[in-house]
Image (cartoon, rainbow, N blue to C red; front, side):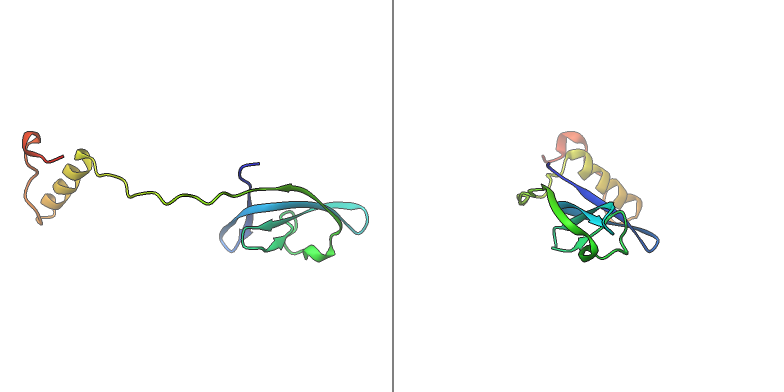
Length: 107
C-alpha cells in the first residue's frame, strides 16, 4: 500500500489524516471495527470516531503503510510567461514599467 488517508468530520469540514497502520478487531464480541494509527501515533476508529480504540478487542494487524520521506524540492523556475504576467500586473497597478519586447527579455 502506498498511501492511505482517513477523512473524519471535524467542525465545519474534514480532518484528513495520513494512516500508517490498520488493525481489525471486535466490539462487544460481535461487531467488527477498524482501528487505524495516523502518522503522529494517534489511534482512532474512523467508522466511529467517538469510540475509544481500547474498547476494540482481539485487534489483528492488517496493513502497514510505509510513508517514505519526501525529498526537498527546489523552488520552481520562473518562465518567461510568469515574468511577463507579473510585470503586466505591476504595470496595471502603476508600480512598474511595461514588459520589454520578447527579443529583449532575459531568460
